[in-house]
Image (cartoon, rainbow, N blue to C red; front, side, top):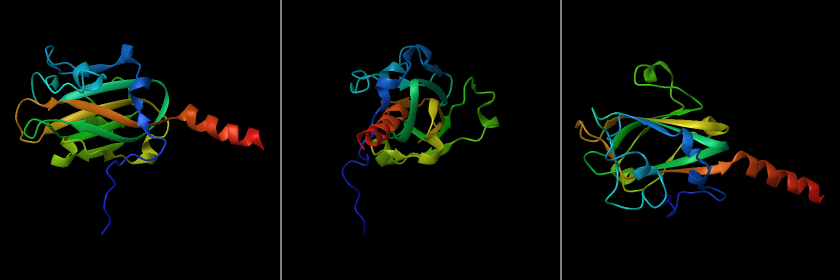
Length: 176
């Protein structure tokens, strides 16, 4: 029986937070007192007292543009046992989505988060669907308990930049 390594991250996978274009980040249905930076920004997302919280119902729609093209390998979504996200749909390069049209498009991947995921176990994505990503839309459709409020303590995206990958390949060719 295979045992999982303590870290599911592969070599060359980094936290993509530094490649986020913060000026374009949006979150629909967030509680203004518990907004997206609490779960996404470094320093804030490590503070257990801060979290992202939904407002009118349990759904959240998060749009994250990047300042360069990235490959996304995995996502970590940490949340409480009851109000933590359950069904999460991910859309690569899909802009201007709202609650009215989010179900009109097939997601690039769907994750059903387990208790282990909510404690920090990464969700490995369908890597082929996330090769040339300029933006990522995260739709939190429902939470674990079916309650009216969803809470997210941390969102972290892991992968690599396309430029970094290509540059390494070019350097190897130049050396010969």
